Every structure is written in C-alpha cells, then in structure tokens.
Length: 460
Length: 163
Image (cartoon, rainbow over all chains, first blue to last red; front, top):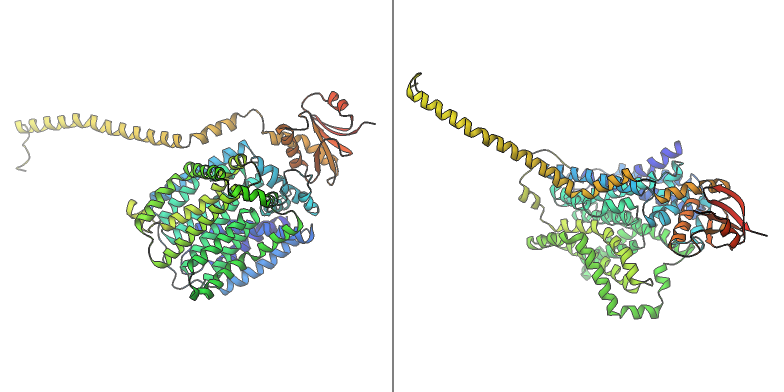
C-alpha cells in the first residue's frame, strides 16, 4: 500500500513543488494552467523515473521511488528558495456566459470520451498492440523489457520512444492491476491537461475570456475521440502545448525567464520520449529562439536561451540516445535508402499527394483556424516583443509542418497507406499548439469587445 | 382625485371597458410569449442534441452492444495460458485463420497483448505452439502434424509436433 501511495503521490508532489517555484513570476498563472502542467508533468516524471530504472538495472523494483524522493527533495529546496514576484499582475475575471458554455462543452466532451472508451475499453489498434502491450510487458516482468527489441515480437516497433508505456506500466505495477481503466485514466488526464494548459496559457497571456474560448476549441476538436482511442498523439500534443505555454510565459518575464525556459525544455524532452515527432519539436523549439535573437549582437543572449532549453531537455536526450544505443535505429530512417530518398524527393506526384492529404486534414479539422488567423492579421501583432514571439510561433509551426511533410515524402512505406493511417494523427498532435498560437495572436480585449464586460466573479 | 372618474359615472364605465379590452387583448400576447419561450427552450435542447447526436448514437450502441469487444473476449481466452506457461517462453502460433492475412495478424497481436513478454511466431517452427481455434480443430492439427500438450478450453491449446 505504501508503495502504491508513493508511486502516485511522489510524481505529483515533485511536479507541484517544482512548477510552484517556476510559476511565481510577474504573470499571474491561472489555476487551469498550473493544474494542467502539474498533471502532465507528474505523469512525465513518473514515466521518466521508471524508464530510467529499466534502462539502468532492468528490474530494480522500488529504486524509481528512491530516485523520486531525491527529486522531491530538490523540488522542495527550489520551492523554498523562491517567492512570488511582488509586481505580480492582478487577477482578471472570466466572462460568465463563456465560462458556463465551456463547462457544458467540457461535460459533453467527457461524455464523448466515456462512451467511446466503453465501446473500445482497450483503445484502438495501436494503443493495445503497441503502447499498452509494452506497458504490460514492463509491469509484468521488468527484467525482460528488452524483449521489445526482439524481432519475433511483431509490431512492437522497438524504435518507438517508451515514455507512454513506462507511465502506464508503472501505474499497472503500483496498483497491482491490469485493469483497462488505468490506460484510459492516463489518456483522460492528458486530454484534460491539454484543454487546461491551452486555456490557462491563453488566459495568462491574453485574457481569461479568450482562454475559455481557446479551451472550447480544443474540446470540440478531435481530442476526445483520439483520447478514447488511447493513441500516443494526445500525450505528445499535450507536451508540445505545455512547452509552448511555458515559452510564452518566459517571453513575458525577465527574472524567471531562464527557469521557465528550462521547464519548457523538460516538457519538450517528455515529448521527445513519447513519440519520434518530439525530436523535430525540440529542433523547432530551439528555432524559435534564433528567430527572436537573430542579430550578431544578441549571440550571448541566444546562447543563454538555447542553453536553458537544452539543459531542460538534456535528461530526455540522454535517455533517448541510450534507447538508440540499446535498440534499433529509427525504422523510417533505416528503411529509406539514399537512392530511394533522392528519387522520392524529386517526385512531384508525391508532393501533390501529401499536400492534398494535409489540405484535407486542415479542411476537416481546422477550417475555423483561418478565421482566427484572419482576425489576428486584421488586428495587428502588437508591440515588438510580442511580434517577435509570434514570429517564433510561426517558425515553430512551420518547422513542424514542413518536417511532417518531408517524412511523408521520403517514407519507405506505401505513401497512400501511410497518409491514410497517420496524417489525421499529426493534425491531432499539432492542433492544441496551433490553437494556443492563434489565440496568442489575437488582441487581449477581443472577447470583451464582442461579449461586453463580465458581470460575475468567475475566474479560471 | 380630479383625474379619476367618480363612481357611477359614464366615464368610469368607459374606463372599465377599455381596461377589459386591454386585458383580453393582453392574454393572447402573454400566452404567445410563453409559447415562444417554450419553443425556444425546445430548440435549444434539440440544437444541443443535434450538435452532439453522435455521442448519443454511440452511447446507445454501447448500451445495446450484444457482446464485449473482441479484445476483451480474446484476452479472457488467453488468461489460463498466462497462468499455465512460463513467461520467458517462445512459442509458435497457429489458428484456423491460416498463416497469412489480416485475421491471423489480429489474433496474433491480441495474443501478444495478452501474453507479453512471451514471444510468438506464426507457424510451427518453435518446439511449443499455441493455438486458438473458433471451429473444431482436429483436422487442422492432423494437417499440421501437431498434438495437444494441454487444452486450456474455449479453443485455446498448447501444442507440439506429433512424433
């Protein structure tokens, strides 16, 4: 019982205290953002420590708890040394109607998730055949976890990052249960965390009313569907959005900027350990800094910023390199020969097929994003620091979309099958951070201009 | 008092008549306003239903689903194998879905999910073979030269090559 309680409580306490020490700057952080980051951060820490112990010892049961006690001590020390910024901005209220409308939408999205999860309790194909299968393997016999690299374990994809199976596997082990409710609860936590982080970050950087609207867009998108499928695209989408949220907060701070960037790097590291797309995301995140500090005179500042993000993601990078050393290299890269890649890169038909598939995704999921983009462009981008942050966000999204595009161009798999089976999921990964970026581009008072002032004291 | 008509005067009668007329003409207006409110509320309820009709359809489907999903069903069938075989084993895999095609792949992956970390390979190349059958299996076993080591029930068998 003590082991179970520790396995659940320690990661939460680590995330709570370390985030508490980071999120005490001038920008008042809404409870939604704090809760979302704590929830996802705790799951990330839990999976990371379990994975680390698997890699180091194979099956040193209980040692992950010892590692977490050490991390908690460090988080407590950090937390005690920090205090809230005395110039902290006042809290704003949310428009009551928007808050109630969001609450209703959240209830419907939850019902949507519950109903879908009831029809497929083990999730869809990739969930049970890849992620949850490995989670069970880790939980049942951690000493044999390297079986995932054995070619006889078909469809195991030994090159896939292992954070999600480690998160679920650790919970299965701690609760001594193989109930399908456990991976479902993890999926729900990530989905809820995504809405909280996007809504909370927009509330902190723009206005609480716009924050509610942003969360509403997240909840009415494909998130509940894909969370019920238990695909890893929802957790990776959460980590993307969390890292971007921390980046936006960092751009508003001066004193706590570095610690926010380190934390953004840590969340990008969790993304890197969740899906291979996370590697591209880390590159894109670093590119945002280059856009913000492009001049030679800013080279020291740029180095500090890049160093902070790299420091946060370093533990994940090390673990990822270790994984590559132990197991196979990336299937997509190893299967694509140089000749074949050159041929594919010069095939216009492939570009056309991928562009059409991407356009379909955009039309199906995100047509309304054009409206927001249009409004943002009409209303202008604000002061120079905000313009520079927006340019960074545009580069981040551009690098990600271009990277995904090129992966499809050079894929060693049948292009039609690959596009049909995964282009929708890439859209799920990107949608939360695109919503966050688009709402950040809107004028802060836009919600109040349309809806009038708030009449109640609701806040998020 | 000067502005009010005195009792019994013709003016009072006229005033009362006008009040009555106003009352009778106001009644339908009030009723139609209430009807409009009810219709509006019904429209809101229907609009909310319409926006989320997929959830309701799926909720109904989940309530009326005749059987549990295939993963749960197959997993239950493999449970005795997990209890009755060592976890570090490597096994062949046969079924009445043949050796190729999406159905055998699905059955194999569900078996991997249920039995991890045991390793499974389609065919009979391993000394011990796990079999899962929906139909009578005697002919298939004869054809593949296999004999039963243990029958776990519900068409799930541990097999080995017949001498």
